[in-house]
Image (tube, rainbow, N blue to C red; front, side):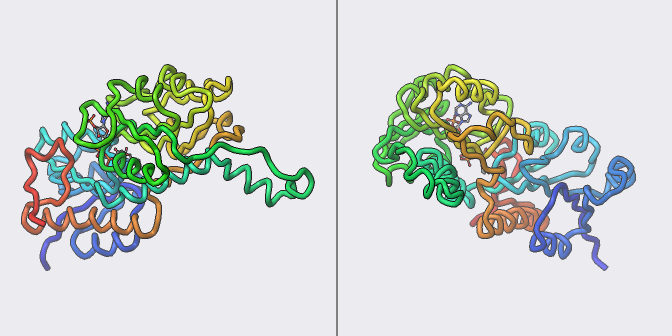
Length: 325
Ligand code: NDP
Protein backbone atom coordinates (compact mmCIF):
# COMPACT_ATOMS: atom_id res chain seq x y z
CA UNK A 1 0.00 0.00 0.00
CA UNK A 2 0.80 3.67 0.16
CA UNK A 3 3.74 4.62 2.39
CA UNK A 4 2.72 6.62 5.44
CA UNK A 5 5.20 9.09 6.98
CA UNK A 6 6.77 8.06 10.27
CA UNK A 7 5.42 9.86 13.35
CA UNK A 8 7.20 9.68 16.70
CA UNK A 9 4.80 10.23 19.59
CA UNK A 10 6.36 11.52 22.83
CA UNK A 11 4.25 11.54 25.98
CA UNK A 12 0.67 10.45 26.34
CA UNK A 13 -2.02 11.25 23.79
CA UNK A 14 -5.75 10.66 23.88
CA UNK A 15 -7.38 7.75 22.05
CA UNK A 16 -9.04 10.22 19.72
CA UNK A 17 -5.64 11.64 18.74
CA UNK A 18 -4.09 8.19 18.39
CA UNK A 19 -6.87 7.08 16.02
CA UNK A 20 -6.13 10.00 13.72
CA UNK A 21 -2.39 9.47 13.96
CA UNK A 22 -2.74 5.80 13.03
CA UNK A 23 -4.93 6.61 10.03
CA UNK A 24 -2.36 9.01 8.59
CA UNK A 25 1.05 7.91 9.89
CA UNK A 26 3.22 4.98 10.78
CA UNK A 27 3.15 5.62 14.52
CA UNK A 28 6.03 4.94 16.91
CA UNK A 29 5.39 5.60 20.60
CA UNK A 30 8.67 6.54 22.27
CA UNK A 31 7.48 5.73 25.78
CA UNK A 32 6.47 2.20 24.73
CA UNK A 33 9.98 1.35 23.59
CA UNK A 34 11.80 -0.86 26.08
CA UNK A 35 15.10 0.73 24.98
CA UNK A 36 14.48 4.24 23.69
CA UNK A 37 18.05 4.92 22.54
CA UNK A 38 18.21 1.64 20.65
CA UNK A 39 14.86 2.41 19.04
CA UNK A 40 16.05 5.84 17.86
CA UNK A 41 19.33 4.39 16.58
CA UNK A 42 17.39 1.86 14.51
CA UNK A 43 14.49 4.00 13.25
CA UNK A 44 15.70 7.64 13.20
CA UNK A 45 15.65 8.07 9.39
CA UNK A 46 11.98 7.01 9.18
CA UNK A 47 10.79 9.77 11.49
CA UNK A 48 9.46 12.82 9.61
CA UNK A 49 7.15 14.13 12.31
CA UNK A 50 7.03 14.37 16.10
CA UNK A 51 3.91 14.80 18.23
CA UNK A 52 4.68 15.94 21.77
CA UNK A 53 3.37 18.22 24.50
CA UNK A 54 4.46 21.24 26.51
CA UNK A 55 5.77 19.07 29.33
CA UNK A 56 7.99 16.63 27.40
CA UNK A 57 8.86 18.86 24.45
CA UNK A 58 11.70 17.51 22.35
CA UNK A 59 15.07 17.02 24.05
CA UNK A 60 17.86 18.67 21.95
CA UNK A 61 19.75 15.39 21.58
CA UNK A 62 16.62 13.70 20.22
CA UNK A 63 16.00 16.49 17.70
CA UNK A 64 19.63 16.22 16.62
CA UNK A 65 19.26 12.45 16.17
CA UNK A 66 16.36 12.72 13.67
CA UNK A 67 17.88 13.65 10.27
CA UNK A 68 14.60 13.67 8.32
CA UNK A 69 12.43 15.48 10.85
CA UNK A 70 10.20 18.10 9.16
CA UNK A 71 7.56 19.03 11.73
CA UNK A 72 7.01 19.02 15.49
CA UNK A 73 3.38 19.37 16.55
CA UNK A 74 3.09 20.19 20.22
CA UNK A 75 -0.06 19.72 22.31
CA UNK A 76 -0.32 22.92 24.38
CA UNK A 77 0.51 26.57 23.77
CA UNK A 78 3.71 26.75 25.86
CA UNK A 79 6.70 25.34 23.98
CA UNK A 80 9.61 26.24 26.27
CA UNK A 81 10.61 22.55 26.22
CA UNK A 82 11.33 22.78 22.46
CA UNK A 83 14.25 24.74 21.01
CA UNK A 84 12.15 26.41 18.31
CA UNK A 85 15.05 28.54 17.03
CA UNK A 86 17.20 25.45 16.49
CA UNK A 87 14.27 23.75 14.75
CA UNK A 88 13.66 26.75 12.46
CA UNK A 89 17.38 26.85 11.60
CA UNK A 90 17.05 23.27 10.34
CA UNK A 91 13.84 24.03 8.45
CA UNK A 92 11.72 22.10 10.96
CA UNK A 93 8.32 23.67 11.58
CA UNK A 94 7.09 23.73 15.19
CA UNK A 95 3.36 24.12 15.81
CA UNK A 96 1.42 24.59 19.06
CA UNK A 97 -2.20 25.09 20.17
CA UNK A 98 -2.84 28.79 20.89
CA UNK A 99 -6.26 30.37 21.49
CA UNK A 100 -8.35 27.20 21.87
CA UNK A 101 -7.37 27.10 25.57
CA UNK A 102 -7.59 30.82 26.45
CA UNK A 103 -10.99 30.58 28.12
CA UNK A 104 -10.15 27.47 30.13
CA UNK A 105 -6.82 28.69 31.46
CA UNK A 106 -8.36 32.07 32.33
CA UNK A 107 -11.18 30.26 34.14
CA UNK A 108 -8.63 28.23 36.10
CA UNK A 109 -6.78 31.41 37.05
CA UNK A 110 -9.96 33.09 38.27
CA UNK A 111 -10.92 29.93 40.17
CA UNK A 112 -7.57 30.01 42.00
CA UNK A 113 -7.96 33.70 42.84
CA UNK A 114 -11.44 33.21 44.27
CA UNK A 115 -10.35 30.08 46.13
CA UNK A 116 -7.40 31.84 47.77
CA UNK A 117 -9.24 35.07 48.59
CA UNK A 118 -12.32 33.38 50.01
CA UNK A 119 -10.34 30.45 51.52
CA UNK A 120 -12.45 27.90 49.67
CA UNK A 121 -10.43 24.84 50.68
CA UNK A 122 -10.34 25.88 54.34
CA UNK A 123 -14.08 26.60 54.26
CA UNK A 124 -14.85 23.26 52.64
CA UNK A 125 -12.85 21.54 55.34
CA UNK A 126 -14.59 23.63 58.01
CA UNK A 127 -17.97 22.53 56.68
CA UNK A 128 -17.25 18.84 56.25
CA UNK A 129 -15.01 18.22 59.27
CA UNK A 130 -17.60 19.23 61.86
CA UNK A 131 -15.70 22.38 62.87
CA UNK A 132 -18.78 24.45 62.01
CA UNK A 133 -20.81 22.50 64.57
CA UNK A 134 -18.06 22.54 67.20
CA UNK A 135 -16.62 26.04 66.77
CA UNK A 136 -19.22 28.02 64.87
CA UNK A 137 -18.50 30.33 61.95
CA UNK A 138 -14.96 30.69 60.59
CA UNK A 139 -13.06 34.00 60.37
CA UNK A 140 -14.13 36.50 57.73
CA UNK A 141 -12.24 36.68 54.44
CA UNK A 142 -11.54 39.64 52.14
CA UNK A 143 -13.73 40.46 49.15
CA UNK A 144 -12.66 39.91 45.54
CA UNK A 145 -14.86 42.80 44.45
CA UNK A 146 -13.32 46.01 43.09
CA UNK A 147 -9.66 44.97 43.49
CA UNK A 148 -6.57 46.32 41.76
CA UNK A 149 -5.64 43.40 39.52
CA UNK A 150 -2.31 43.02 37.70
CA UNK A 151 -1.57 40.84 34.68
CA UNK A 152 2.08 39.90 34.15
CA UNK A 153 2.21 38.84 30.46
CA UNK A 154 -0.71 40.40 28.61
CA UNK A 155 -1.00 37.93 25.75
CA UNK A 156 -3.88 35.76 24.58
CA UNK A 157 -4.59 34.25 28.00
CA UNK A 158 -3.61 37.35 29.99
CA UNK A 159 -6.14 39.45 28.13
CA UNK A 160 -8.81 36.83 28.72
CA UNK A 161 -8.06 36.93 32.46
CA UNK A 162 -8.20 40.74 32.43
CA UNK A 163 -11.67 40.74 30.83
CA UNK A 164 -12.92 38.26 33.43
CA UNK A 165 -11.44 40.36 36.26
CA UNK A 166 -13.48 43.31 34.99
CA UNK A 167 -16.62 41.31 35.79
CA UNK A 168 -15.48 41.67 39.43
CA UNK A 169 -15.15 45.47 38.94
CA UNK A 170 -11.37 45.17 39.01
CA UNK A 171 -9.07 48.03 38.02
CA UNK A 172 -6.69 46.24 35.69
CA UNK A 173 -3.06 47.04 34.96
CA UNK A 174 -0.41 44.92 33.25
CA UNK A 175 3.21 44.47 32.33
CA UNK A 176 4.61 42.92 29.16
CA UNK A 177 7.90 43.87 27.49
CA UNK A 178 5.94 46.15 25.17
CA UNK A 179 2.72 48.08 25.93
CA UNK A 180 -0.38 46.87 24.08
CA UNK A 181 -3.30 48.70 22.49
CA UNK A 182 -5.67 48.03 25.40
CA UNK A 183 -7.72 50.12 27.83
CA UNK A 184 -5.65 48.98 30.86
CA UNK A 185 -2.73 50.85 32.38
CA UNK A 186 0.82 49.77 31.63
CA UNK A 187 3.45 49.26 34.33
CA UNK A 188 7.07 49.58 33.18
CA UNK A 189 8.40 46.73 35.34
CA UNK A 190 7.08 43.68 37.21
CA UNK A 191 7.93 45.39 40.54
CA UNK A 192 5.98 48.50 39.58
CA UNK A 193 3.05 46.32 38.55
CA UNK A 194 3.14 44.40 41.84
CA UNK A 195 3.40 47.59 43.89
CA UNK A 196 0.20 48.92 42.34
CA UNK A 197 -1.87 45.73 42.58
CA UNK A 198 -3.54 43.50 45.14
CA UNK A 199 -3.84 40.42 42.94
CA UNK A 200 -1.11 39.48 40.47
CA UNK A 201 -1.77 36.95 37.72
CA UNK A 202 1.40 35.52 36.17
CA UNK A 203 0.80 34.35 32.60
CA UNK A 204 3.98 34.89 30.57
CA UNK A 205 5.64 32.04 28.65
CA UNK A 206 8.28 29.96 30.48
CA UNK A 207 11.90 29.47 29.43
CA UNK A 208 15.17 31.28 30.08
CA UNK A 209 13.84 34.79 29.32
CA UNK A 210 11.23 34.74 32.07
CA UNK A 211 13.07 32.64 34.67
CA UNK A 212 12.37 34.13 38.12
CA UNK A 213 10.73 37.20 36.57
CA UNK A 214 8.70 37.08 39.79
CA UNK A 215 11.57 37.35 42.27
CA UNK A 216 11.74 38.32 45.95
CA UNK A 217 11.37 42.04 45.09
CA UNK A 218 8.17 41.49 43.08
CA UNK A 219 6.69 39.30 45.81
CA UNK A 220 7.64 41.86 48.46
CA UNK A 221 6.03 44.63 46.38
CA UNK A 222 2.77 42.68 46.20
CA UNK A 223 2.73 42.78 49.97
CA UNK A 224 1.15 41.14 53.04
CA UNK A 225 -2.42 41.48 51.69
CA UNK A 226 -1.43 40.56 48.15
CA UNK A 227 -2.36 37.40 46.27
CA UNK A 228 -0.13 35.79 43.64
CA UNK A 229 -1.72 33.48 41.05
CA UNK A 230 0.68 31.56 38.80
CA UNK A 231 -0.75 29.68 35.82
CA UNK A 232 2.24 30.20 33.51
CA UNK A 233 5.26 28.01 34.28
CA UNK A 234 6.87 27.15 37.60
CA UNK A 235 10.15 28.62 36.37
CA UNK A 236 8.68 32.15 36.19
CA UNK A 237 8.33 32.42 39.98
CA UNK A 238 11.24 32.05 42.42
CA UNK A 239 9.60 29.32 44.48
CA UNK A 240 12.06 29.58 47.40
CA UNK A 241 11.45 33.35 47.63
CA UNK A 242 7.71 32.73 47.44
CA UNK A 243 7.79 30.20 50.29
CA UNK A 244 9.97 32.54 52.35
CA UNK A 245 7.60 35.49 51.84
CA UNK A 246 4.53 33.38 52.69
CA UNK A 247 6.19 32.06 55.84
CA UNK A 248 7.10 35.59 56.99
CA UNK A 249 3.63 36.93 56.22
CA UNK A 250 5.16 39.23 53.59
CA UNK A 251 2.68 37.88 51.02
CA UNK A 252 -1.02 37.32 51.69
CA UNK A 253 -1.61 34.15 49.71
CA UNK A 254 -0.96 32.25 46.51
CA UNK A 255 -2.83 30.15 43.97
CA UNK A 256 -0.43 27.89 42.11
CA UNK A 257 -1.08 25.61 39.14
CA UNK A 258 2.57 25.26 38.14
CA UNK A 259 5.77 24.47 40.04
CA UNK A 260 9.51 24.53 39.53
CA UNK A 261 10.04 20.75 39.70
CA UNK A 262 6.73 19.22 38.57
CA UNK A 263 5.25 16.96 39.74
CA UNK A 264 7.13 17.71 42.99
CA UNK A 265 5.58 20.37 45.24
CA UNK A 266 7.55 21.58 48.29
CA UNK A 267 6.04 20.41 51.59
CA UNK A 268 6.18 23.99 52.89
CA UNK A 269 3.55 25.02 50.32
CA UNK A 270 1.34 22.02 51.12
CA UNK A 271 1.29 23.04 54.78
CA UNK A 272 -0.05 26.58 54.18
CA UNK A 273 -3.74 27.42 54.54
CA UNK A 274 -3.42 30.63 52.49
CA UNK A 275 -2.17 28.66 49.48
CA UNK A 276 -4.31 26.75 46.98
CA UNK A 277 -2.53 24.16 44.85
CA UNK A 278 -3.61 22.49 41.61
CA UNK A 279 -1.61 19.92 39.58
CA UNK A 280 -1.06 21.84 36.31
CA UNK A 281 -4.72 21.66 35.25
CA UNK A 282 -4.97 25.06 33.55
CA UNK A 283 -6.42 23.62 30.34
CA UNK A 284 -7.41 20.21 31.70
CA UNK A 285 -11.07 19.77 30.81
CA UNK A 286 -12.55 17.23 28.41
CA UNK A 287 -13.74 19.95 26.05
CA UNK A 288 -10.56 22.02 25.91
CA UNK A 289 -8.21 19.03 25.74
CA UNK A 290 -10.26 17.74 22.81
CA UNK A 291 -9.94 21.07 20.99
CA UNK A 292 -6.18 21.09 21.68
CA UNK A 293 -5.84 17.50 20.47
CA UNK A 294 -7.77 18.23 17.29
CA UNK A 295 -5.53 21.23 16.52
CA UNK A 296 -2.40 19.15 17.23
CA UNK A 297 -3.63 16.59 14.67
CA UNK A 298 -4.86 19.22 12.19
CA UNK A 299 -1.41 20.82 12.03
CA UNK A 300 0.16 17.46 11.12
CA UNK A 301 -2.56 16.52 8.61
CA UNK A 302 -2.35 19.90 6.90
CA UNK A 303 1.43 19.73 6.67
CA UNK A 304 1.50 16.31 5.00
CA UNK A 305 -1.46 17.22 2.75
CA UNK A 306 -0.11 20.43 1.20
CA UNK A 307 2.86 21.67 3.22
CA UNK A 308 0.91 24.24 5.23
CA UNK A 309 0.25 24.42 8.97
CA UNK A 310 -2.43 26.21 10.98
CA UNK A 311 -0.60 27.49 14.06
CA UNK A 312 3.22 27.68 13.82
CA UNK A 313 5.11 29.12 16.78
CA UNK A 314 6.45 32.65 16.13
CA UNK A 315 10.04 31.43 15.65
CA UNK A 316 8.90 29.28 12.72
CA UNK A 317 6.61 31.75 10.95
CA UNK A 318 9.42 32.62 8.54
CA UNK A 319 9.82 29.03 7.32
CA UNK A 320 6.21 27.83 7.65
CA UNK A 321 3.47 28.17 5.07
CA UNK A 322 0.31 29.10 6.93
CA UNK A 323 -2.95 27.51 5.80
CA UNK A 324 -5.77 29.82 4.77
CA UNK A 325 -8.62 29.41 7.27
P1 NDP B 1 1.13 34.76 24.50
O1 NDP B 1 2.39 34.63 23.75
O2 NDP B 1 -0.11 35.17 23.78
O3 NDP B 1 1.32 35.79 25.72
C1 NDP B 1 2.46 35.87 26.47
C2 NDP B 1 2.65 37.31 26.95
O4 NDP B 1 3.78 37.38 27.81
C3 NDP B 1 2.88 38.28 25.82
O5 NDP B 1 1.96 39.32 25.93
C4 NDP B 1 4.30 38.81 26.00
O6 NDP B 1 4.30 40.19 25.68
C5 NDP B 1 4.55 38.54 27.48
N1 NDP B 1 5.94 38.29 27.75
C6 NDP B 1 6.78 37.44 27.13
N2 NDP B 1 8.00 37.50 27.66
C7 NDP B 1 7.95 38.42 28.64
C8 NDP B 1 8.89 38.92 29.56
N3 NDP B 1 10.17 38.51 29.54
N4 NDP B 1 8.48 39.85 30.44
C9 NDP B 1 7.21 40.29 30.46
N5 NDP B 1 6.26 39.83 29.62
C10 NDP B 1 6.64 38.90 28.72
O7 NDP B 1 0.92 33.37 25.22
P2 NDP B 1 -0.43 32.74 25.82
O8 NDP B 1 -1.19 33.79 26.53
O9 NDP B 1 -1.10 31.95 24.78
O10 NDP B 1 0.21 31.70 26.89
C11 NDP B 1 1.06 32.17 27.90
C12 NDP B 1 1.71 31.01 28.64
O11 NDP B 1 0.78 30.41 29.53
C13 NDP B 1 2.19 29.84 27.80
O12 NDP B 1 3.43 30.11 27.18
C14 NDP B 1 2.28 28.73 28.83
O13 NDP B 1 3.56 28.67 29.40
C15 NDP B 1 1.26 29.13 29.89
N6 NDP B 1 0.14 28.19 29.93
C16 NDP B 1 -0.11 27.46 31.06
C17 NDP B 1 -1.16 26.58 31.13
C18 NDP B 1 -1.46 25.79 32.36
O14 NDP B 1 -1.96 24.69 32.25
N7 NDP B 1 -1.19 26.31 33.54
C19 NDP B 1 -2.01 26.33 29.97
C20 NDP B 1 -1.71 27.18 28.84
C21 NDP B 1 -0.67 28.07 28.84
P3 NDP B 1 5.64 40.92 25.16
O15 NDP B 1 6.11 40.12 23.98
O16 NDP B 1 5.23 42.30 24.84
O17 NDP B 1 6.58 40.85 26.31
